Length: 525
Image 1 (tube, rainbow, N blue to C red):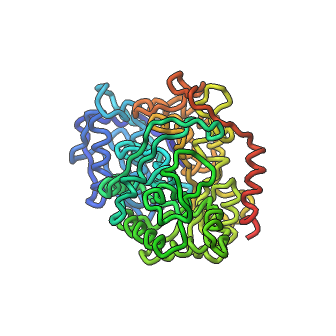
Image 2 (cartoon, rainbow, N blue to C red; image 1 turned 90 degrees about the vertical axis):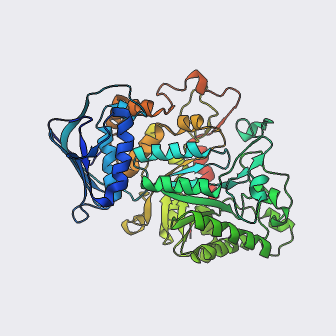
Image 3 (cartoon, rainbow, N blue to C red; image 1 turned 180 degrees about the vertical axis):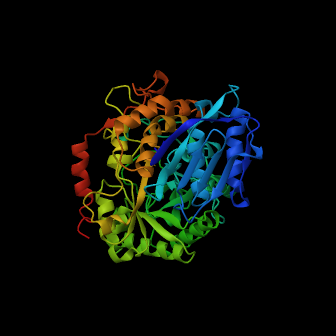
C-alpha cells in the first residue's frame, strides 16, 4: 500500500470502458498482458490494441523502479525507468480504480473512473522482501502463487522461501529421494507455544517438485519478484538426517515435531555431508536464478559435534559456512546468511549478504564489518509475533508488534554512519509459520501489518495517522476484494481465535536483554 512520492491532482476523470485500448512497445508485452489479465475479468475492459492507455520506457528520465503516471480525461500515460518501474506504476493505476477492480470476476458494470492527475514515484529501498517459511508448515503451490500476487499488489520484490528445517524438507533433490519420501513428513506438530509441551497426532507434510518451484520462480518473475531460496545448513537439518542418518553428527528421532530451541539435527563434518550439500546447492542453483542463495547458518549448536568427539567443535560452524559459500561461488552466486554467521569472522566471504534479524544488532554488526545487509529485526518485522494484548489473540507469542510498530520500521539503524548505512539494501518481513498451518492463518498474521511494512520500505518514513486513514478508507476494501482474511482493527473474528493453542507472550524489555546476550559475539567485530 505504498503512498506515491509526488501527486499532482488534475481535473475530471478518465473513464475505463470496454472500448479502452492499450498501446505498448514489445519490451512491455509481459506487463501489458498482466494488466489485461488483472483488469479484464473484473471490469469487462480487456484492453485490446488501440488508444486509451499507453505504456512506455524512459530510462533516461526515471530510476529503474520509478514511474510517472499521467491521467487526463482523454488518456492514461505510464512511463517507467524499466519494465519493473512500469509494473510498479500499474499497481498504482489499479489502485486508482474502485475496489471491485481487484476481484477475479465481474460484480459490477462500473463505471470505472480513474481520477485525473500526475503521480511520480520510486522506491526508497531496492530490497523489499518477505521471508515465507514453508518448512514448519507446508504451503501448497497454489497458495504460494496467491501470496506472490499479494506481494505484487504491495510492490514487494523479493520472496525469500525458507524451504527446509528440522520439521520438514520441501524440495526434491536428484539422488536423494528420501529427503521428500521421509524428510517431508512428520507424525505430528506442537499445538501452541513449545513451553506448554502439547502435541497433536495429526501427520503433516508436503514438498515441491522441481517443476513446482520453476513455476513459482517464473510466476514471480513476471511480477518483478525475485525468489531467493533458503536451505538451512549446517544446523536445522533434522528432517534431512532423519532421511539419511549417516549425514548427522549424532542420531535423531525422526523428523522433528517440536518447535523452537536447538535440535541435534546438525551435519557431521564429513565428505559425505559435503557431497550432500553440493548436490543440494547444485539443484537449487539450477532451479533458482537469484544471485543470492540463503544457507541459513543460524542457531548452530556445538553439542552434537562435541558428542561425536571432534577436537575443535567451535570452529565447525565457520568451516561449514566457508565451504557452502565456495560451492555457491562456483555457480556465480553470493551467499546469504543470518547474522550468526558473522561470528565466523574470516570464514565469511566479503561479498556475503547478511540478514540482520536479532534486533538491530545484526544489521549494525554486518554493516560495520563491510557486508551488504538486509534488515529484518525481529523487534520490528517478525509477523509471527502477537498483534494485540487481548486474551483472544490466536497463539500470542513473542513481543507485542502492532501495525504501528511495523509502520515505524526503519531499515537503516540510527547508530550507523552514512557510509555504513549505504550497506543496508533494504528490509524484509519474516513470516515464520510454526503457528500458521494454512493460508488463512498467514492472512491473519500478515495483513494488514504487511501493508504497513510495504509502505515503510517503498515510501520511507510517513505519518501513521494518515496511513491509517488510507488503510481503513480504501485499502481494506481492496483486501476484501482479493479475499484476504486480515486481522480486524478490533481484534480477531471468533473463527480466527485459537483457544486450543495457547501462546507465550513476552515483554519487549525481556527480549531486548536476551538479544544483548545472544549477540555479544558479533557486536564487537
